[in-house]
Amino acid sequence: MAMKIRLARGGSKKRPHYAIVATDSRMPRDGRFLEKLGTYNPLLPRDSEDRIKMDMERVQYWLGQGAQPTDRVARFLEAAGATEKTERKNLKKGEPGKAAKDRAEKRAARETAAREAEEAAKNAPVVEEAAEEATATDETALDASEATSGTETP
Image 1 (tube, rainbow, N blue to C red):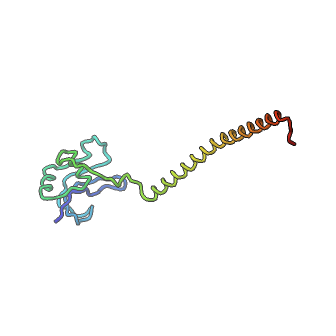
Image 2: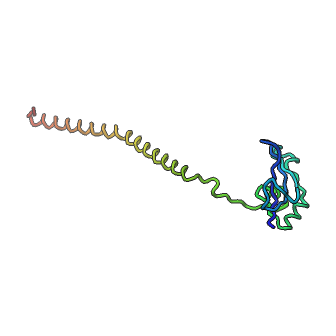
Image 3: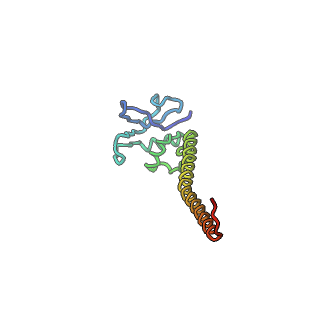
């Protein structure tokens, strides 16, 4: 029989209260259990002694019988010093989904296009001024050459 130490929810709507129970893993969450090992009240402050209460002797007994604690109960046991701390890795948790990645790529492409257009707009007047200066110097050079040759062009 696969044994679990898990939370069984009680309390009314939006006022949760949990019992820490030892049960067969095939039983429903709030269904039949073998033994009540403690309570957990998430509405109490974190530093309150009444937030988590466990009968550690019975918890150790069930762990010795092969019962596996759920993630939340394992954290409670680690905080109480009953079990060793395990390193958890949830690498997919913070990773955005496919649609979010697509949106980010499109936004980055739009931003780079906008930056390039902005740079082109900043550089365009400089290029036009340089072109105007070049044509002005060419005209003055032509005027100077005409003045020295003595002939005017109509």
